[in-house]
Image 1 (cartoon, rainbow, N blue to C red):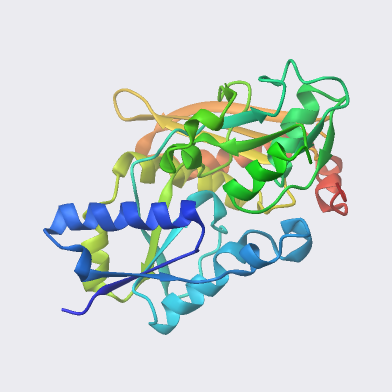
Image 2 (cartoon, one colour):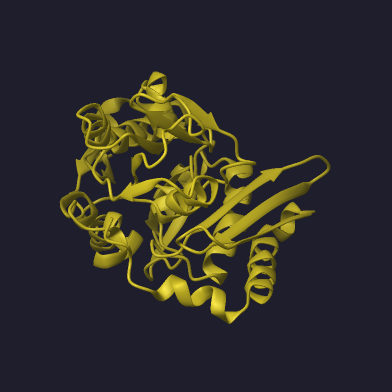
Length: 314
């Protein structure tokens, strides 16, 4: 047997995620590390750090080169952060599995203030996420914002150097790198709804590679997969991109139910619409889509005009 080639971005977090996939496959199939080859692939999202993603191509910037390698057969599976995945998957590729989801919450990291509430008036917050900016602007209209991109370590170095007063990151990534202590405040999902797919690792494969699909599906987590069916259905109906502040969170309840919460905001945070609903797990994707349709109707066409406006420079 030749080594199973795992494609991934090269950041410390991405490599940790690829290593987790490898470890789970080893445990599920009695394989050794020698049976795997982790292939680092540079993506445009890793290289272009001086502009917002919305200006240079959106979420696909973190996946395009990896998906091209997968489609061409240079790698056998691709490992991604689910929240980086576009709603449309290239023809011939499939999302084959999702690992058990990590903590979905966002972490606030303040340089001198430990919480959002104690940030001084007019403090400068660095974030590349329009969702995080919009929610925080709604909570604290006095704050100023600047685009802060790069891997986790880069952002924390810029924070420590005083380039910004605070930033926000997914606690899942900090946990996976053993850096949870960097968070000064963990934000509840009620106050700060996460991005669709946040905290989940997904594995992409070729749809006709039956042997690899069978291997990977052995480590699929049904609860995470079901939740993401709802969240990605919501995102797809809204045609979500990096220019659109969208939040969603689905959890499985008792007796085969799924609880879903979704939110849309204007980029400046002045207007927000949200919905919460419960349905059967078998209807996960339609629950997400129907929630999005409801919000589109409730918000009205003028609400979405701001989503197509030029991104803020900082």
